[in-house]
Image (tube, rainbow, N blue to C red; front, side, top):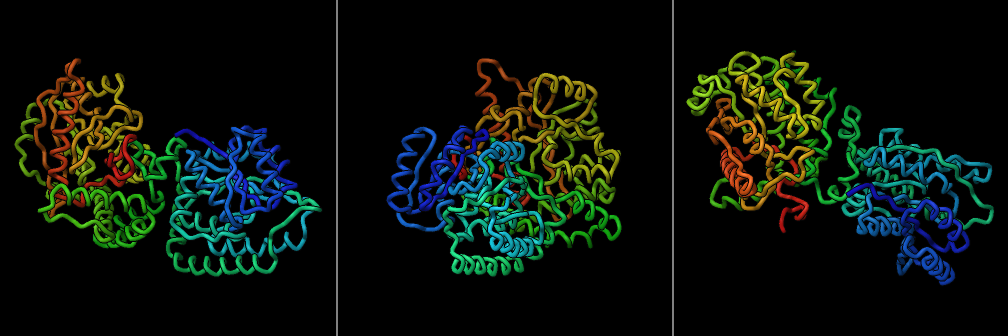
Length: 580
């Protein structure tokens, strides 16, 4: 879904100001949702006339009783999400905010669609001094609750939300429904590591303006919210401190992913998942490994994994989905039960795999740590001097052999990868060994130029290692379905199309961590893959299914070592759970 913003206006008895507010906003051509929070009959009549005047642009929603500003805003955000908009610009109905700044908010969201865009008020002489100074008390509490000065003003009613992010929060957490809503939603979004940007905007107070801020009760509610948020901050203190060393995540790295983010990233959008963790943190682990050794440094993985388990909801749910399918596909087998424990062990295995990659590229893994289950196929290929295409998976640790190849232990091995989503980790590996980049072949798709370049590599006797369980970012439409763990899933056509173009032998390769180290499984897949033009689709489906069968075999063999932390079975025709 492309970038699709709209405007949400909560209103309660502002019949005299709403007409001008809507008129000033309508000129920008954006869809407008007006949420009537149980207003009186006079205001209802004004709103009905506006709905008729701006038919086609203005949608009028009515709450039967007054629930508070927060209730109205949440109703508007949900309605906008259900209408397939990606972003909602919230603005008060009383005309205090400068509608001329709407394009600035929209452009800021277009540039950084994952960020919450906040208005930073610039007041004139009309602002009541008591209200001006009183706001700073809330600002200070928010800075304490977030341990940050990022949220410059938490009370401004002019702000823009990414709807997937905001609606996920309001659907999962009980937020206040009155004036304290504006404060609490921002603090909780910050705790979820949302990015924030501020835009200075003029705010004026009309001398005859209507304010629904109740000096006593709204201050009581705000104080109660701050008490709750401070307690929440104390509970989250270790994670908030850890956030200081990690970048704020861009929830929607691409506006096209807005709708999918509501359901969790799917198989067509794994590359949009932001790389988690900072370069500093990864580099510190690398330094610790060098200074104190692998065994001591590995202890740090447990609290790190616990943190990512608690904060990585999408990955946690994807892990549970994977284990559910694994159990359903093999009910008699001793497979892990979905839950927090299996998700922790799953993520820990992933962290240990990354740690082993670092150790391998640092020269701390030798030939004795890696052994073939049956070396005959690999030895025969090396002896022939031929190049080949080797198809692996995000199963186990493909880096082990590539790192050993850099040390001269094996034949020429070149990994074909899509590294845009993991540049920080790859830069750490590159710093550990200058040979890292030389054994890496980065591509974005499988076009003619890519095939020609790879043909030269194969002709030179190199082994091109590629994964078959992810779809390149620019090949979202080139998939074929195969049955995997009891359900159909989209698999990339690229490996088989590439093998057909190269005309070389094809092998499968998996590297699993076992008790005595890493074990390599290298098996012939095809002497040559042919894709007749008239039966191309059927042949692609047959090769993908053959690959899926072997992948399933090794997933059962090492269930914690398949590292696809997104809904692998989802597709545009399916929901988030992958069911039709």
